[in-house]
Length: 308
Image 1 (cartoon, rainbow, N blue to C red):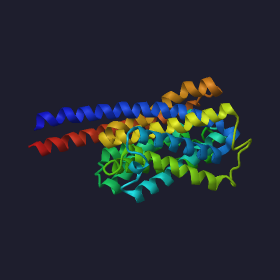
Image 2 (cartoon, rainbow, N blue to C red):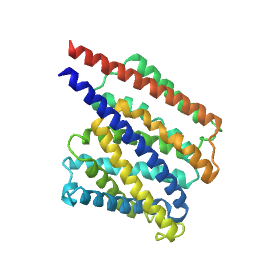
Image 3 (spheres, rainbow, N blue to C red):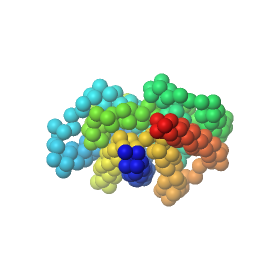
Image 4 (cartoon, rainbow, N blue to C red):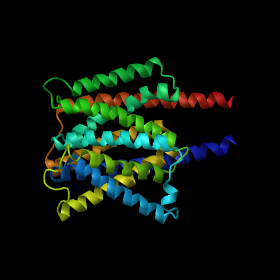
């Protein structure tokens, strides 16, 4: 039995890595699309159109899979709804930061804190034990955040504080994706995430009215359609990846959008992160990768102990 189980784990891990890597590449392009469209449709409009086109995409996927809309009904409805609404808060925070002019790469540097937060949240949510080495590396990682947020630096701005709260919520939704993978399909998880953006966008419209129009020009509408479709497909890939592969294997790819955002931001807006942002992000990423290394060692020792 032991000889047949190992190849299956490796196969699932490899598939999960491919899915999540593709998902983050799509997300980086979708985020560039929404940042480009925000000056015309605004924060609420972007959330609304993302929800509309994303939900339509997932309904089409369900139809192609032969399940129809009935196949999108959640099993763990309460957790699906809570996760979806919390993710709307994350979307709103990032959209607000981009609307106010924050470069993509800077926002991704801030979001690189997510794996560290996942390490902390895994203690109460998953009952995970964290030793002194991982505590130390986590504290070093948050020191990297202080390097990025040094007074007078490029990221010394109030919206970064809001984004850090959003990143903590994003880390929580990542863990919940793993939990939901036991009961609900990736299409179901993604469909309701997209649907949740529609009422939230409508509620926010009076607070954040579109700068130009809620019904933009043809080019912008095509961009918004690509945003919704791409976002839906990326989140479906994430849900599938987290359902079949361990979080410790997939978490390093949280950093890949930072790589994608550099050429995208430079080509479209001429953005380039400040040296302090690079330095702080490097510290955060190094600490996160060390935590993941320790997690893999712990998992390996656990498997060896069970095999004795």
